[in-house]
Image (cartoon, rainbow, N blue to C red):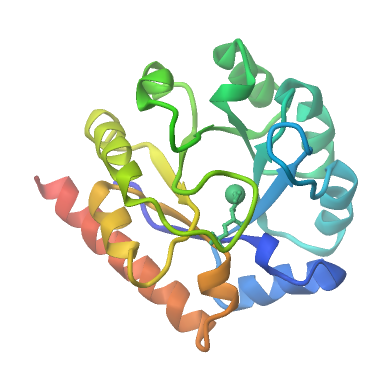
Length: 224
Ligand code: DX5
Ligand code: ZN
């Protein structure tokens, strides 16, 4: 049974003190740290690259969940591996040969994730379920934090979970206390949240409650 992993999105953190923000999230109980990498082509925004990841890993010993919103994901695999990234999640829309890219990521020593945008059918990744380590089902159009959760993406999570009971399934975008139930019920177990965690009055409590809700639903799903 896949267990809950809570992955705060550092996009909502203070980039001027990024390592401290990472440590703060770990001290509040974060399992993973979600790093949004954007190149200005795949999405209309630019964030960070491997040099920043490399600086961070000198200060941290944490699982870095790198969400690559970039046009040529195969280009950066080795740089991110050298920089100390733990998981390299590329977008299915950005590659011609996802299977070869997963092999490249594994050969570089990272876990491989495959992301799908809200309008991309889940059928595009269905056959990769045994090969990828994680599937990221986007619940907003990628590019910016603070957007509204798209509940209409939940059937994709459900379909994937039905076929792959042990796969890590991540949701990203607009996740908050008011919709975590829907994501957990559909079968998501890796929870990315920027705004709702960074802006919470009680960050540890929010992370803990996301974890409890996800693990409770996973337990129910396993008994079905
Ligand atoms: C959006 C990013 C998300 C974003 C989530 O393109 O992939 O990781 O930071 O932020 P919230 O939780 O605020 O929607
Ligand atoms: Zn993301």
